[in-house]
Length: 163
Image (spheres, rainbow, N blue to C red):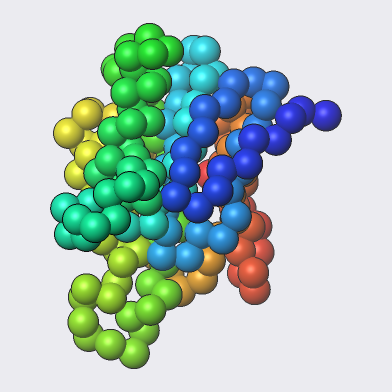
């Protein structure tokens, strides 16, 4: 059986086939997978918040924020592992509206902000998003298999899907 790489909250990891990579409990957090179809090398991030500049006292964990975590993962894939940026593809999942269901305050909708920030960054890097399962009001657990590029999504009370 293939080794499973576990990505914790506010973290990212790199994986390659035959390994698989997984993260649990994506509520408003967003799971971002960047992968290269030719080598199978991929990275998965479990990001909590969209922008490190909004909470300056929290800069001690770069992986907590979309702007710094994705930059670090992108840098490792393109510079350290030498994957050409034009070969990278993305899949995203999570970004649920967990806290704003009774409020009109958009600042409480962290999930939507995470999705928006990830899409802005991926667009700037010209990385196409091949599939996404974002929003709604439920959490997700995801597993990515870099041997076939399938993202398996489990949701409590909703079921399972593959994108």
